Length: 404
Image 1: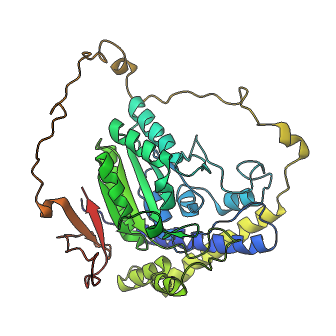
Image 2 (image 1 turned 180 degrees about the vertical axis):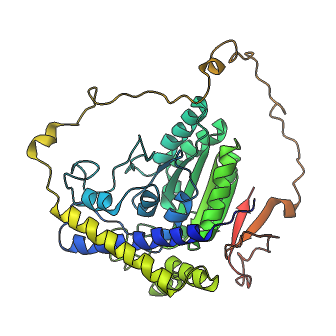
Image 3 (image 1 turned 30 degrees about the horizontal axis):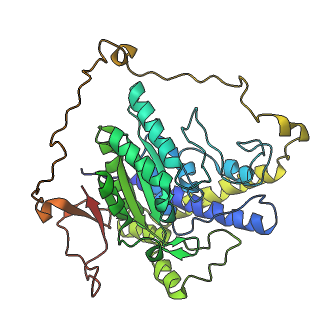
């Protein structure tokens, strides 16, 4: 599938990535001023994943972010003031000041499910949303993210297995940022690629350079369209690095300094700026205009957040339970008759193709198993290169492996 971006889309990707970073830098300053009520979790170095994946969705699609996916919220239409007031627990926040961190969403307009603190639990939830969308004929795709450590939770495996069996239109992004709090990936998982977990459930997976926003977008867009066409769930592993500690209280002293230096040289925003310049997609004036817009919007929203009031005391007993505060109705996009007898009737007979027998199966040719996508974002496919997992590192450029 050839996926290209218009110049305007290239510039939008830069806008969202730069806004993501500038917003978080502002939030760090607020945290140090004791104006952030809850925890603050940085996505420094991971902006290309949140922005590139969410940008591949359509407005009708659903997503469920985690704590480091502020970029995805911006792409979905939330403003910096929503995120600022939320973390400052202001009455003007999406939760009216009842939450001091990232637990908010928008089910009616933006189709965003609030994060769940129990890692892995969003995957069965989004599987259910994908299944419901299929049942109602909505042709939607559900997307969520999980960290490398979160792929070891039971909920992750149960959710992926359910999605696979039901052929749910779920795109699950593994943000492999090398550290599950202070535990390196190799101390928790004995595999090179976390995307290999997809093999256990018979679903396809991709491995992508998570610091190349164009490649992240292209792989995500292909996965989204495959899901929408009814091919079932897809797992994407985006390799990146968490450039700060788990949260603001964590100095990340357990991370080797050389590792930080290695990934600092591969900063996604710096790389993308160079790509835009080399591709002649912008000039100094265009960059200055976008940067000025971001600075202006952030300043306006910061002033709004700081001048916003705290929630009134009487609010504490309101909204604890839903007592007729809103109506939940299905949004049908297909005739209901298709789902009731006689059209929905099927014979109560199971068909088993191989009766579970053990027989030697011919392996497909190696060349048919894998293909690759260059990290330059040109969208071309090239034959897979020999693995360099053992011995010396490969001399070929980093590639985004696509497993089918």
